[in-house]
Length: 474
Image (tube, rainbow, N blue to C red; front, top):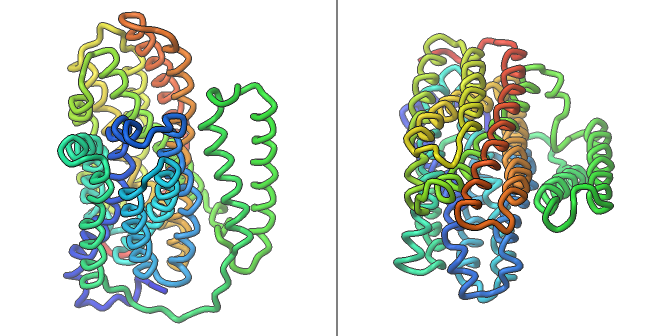
């Protein structure tokens, strides 16, 4: 198991290189979350079974969400470096299986396996940074993480379209192989984590099953609700009842087991709880913006798929810039509470402005509105992880990172599903100008909800207690 406090001083110069290697893995999961979308039509044309198309995305999202807290706890028990490299190996093996899949069913199975690896990549990356860098100095590296997120978000669709057109859709998965090998070799050379005294290991398998059942039901409910069955139906009621029962059973078990998968006592810390709420809401806002702004740009403003990807730059560039600025200020002063407050307020403004868009809104106006969402995301996304990790003991950093990452993923998954139902209800059966008007109307509703979610984030940000960050400023 890894710990921060005993890192040798001569390792300090290698921290930047070590984190860069970890970022390769994070880039893998970010790219694969978006690269497949542009290859979907080609995949269906070759493999058929268009009725299973949604499962190529759903299977990946489902297993990513379910496995995230498990990876975090395993990192606490067995060591972060080992779990990170295992996640990379699993991810690239599943990528090869996806590239070789002869049928849609096998492709979906490979994507599910990929999702398990992706869950480990995301949570292990943040937990490793938590081991290497004390919270006070973590701001120095926020910009690098923001660049990776922006690259995956914008570069994913662009790379997917280019690779599919030039080499075929299977190479959209094979691109993970060289990136994964680089990540494994790089961390093997540069990632040095000190050893801590071993403790008796007991894996909470029942907790994992109960949490996995609850999370799976949530993702499936938000995916199928409004499409496979009506929201007001017996299927919906049954799934909600199952979620409640599984979640209650999970909480009761975690409170009594000796080595819980999720140490629920961390929620007694108000700052950790508020950071978790911030993570959930910021995930919903970011996923809504990344997926539904391109829909508006393509369906209303006439942009192509590649153009709509580039038109996200007014949102993603501020994410990088403000992350760097906030990180440097946080490292210099030790103050951080102000950033999620400003970020949440900025997202409220951005959501409110984007909700005013009509079929006549130009892409320049849309870009100006998106800047506020970018500023807000840059000041909340990375800060939530830092606040959460600073609120728990070092031995629980993996579990804390897993909780925040899971909630961010769940927030995004639920938002995508609910907003998808809103978009479908306003565009079903429409064509031409009527379709453009329908897309604009659904976008208005979606970003009104974004503004409301951001208001909840603002309340959570005000409730955070500014506890001094661990570690000394650089």
